[in-house]
Length: 226
Image (cartoon, rainbow, N blue to C red):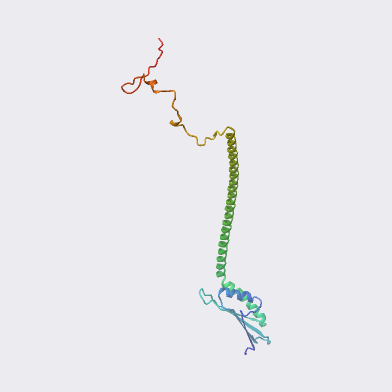
C-alpha cells in the first residue's frame, strides 16, 4: 500500500521542540551536520490503524577525526509524538557515541580550568607581594622624610646657636676695646717686632778682643764649692 503522508524535519532552522536545541547544540559542538528526521504514515496494521514510521538520520563528522553515522527507526502513533521521541533518543545515542570524546574534552577543559586557576592564584600572589613591597617602600620613604625634617630642624637650631655665640663674642670684643677674642688674622711675631736697645753702644764691646775664629770670649765667674 502506498504511503498516504510523508513528513521531513531538519534541525538548525530555529525550531523550539523539546530536546531540539540540546541535540542541535551538541551536533554543532561535535562538528556534525544538522540531524534530519523523516516520517511516513503507513496503514499496514490489522484493523486499519494508521501508524508513523519515524527515521532519524544523524550524519557523522566529515573532517578528521571522523565519527560514525547514527541511523535508527521506530513506529509511533503520530508524527509529533514520534518526532519528540526521535529527538530524545537521538540525543541519548549521540551522547553515548561520543562519551569518550566528550570525557576527553571535559578532562582537557578541567585541566585548562585548573591551569587558569593556578595562573590566577600566582598572579594574585604576585599582586599581593607587590602591594606589600610598595607599602614597605612608602614606609621607608616616610621614615627618611621624617629623618630629613628632624635633621633640618637640628641644623637650623645649631645655626641659630652659632649666630648667637658669634654675636655674644662680638659684643665682648667691643666691650674689651676691640681685642680679637676669636683669633682672626693672628700670626706669630717676626724679627721686625724686636727693637734695638738705644742705650747699647759699640764702644761697650771694644775692650773685648776677638779670638782667631771671630768669637769674643766672655769670662763668667763660676763659684765652685770646695
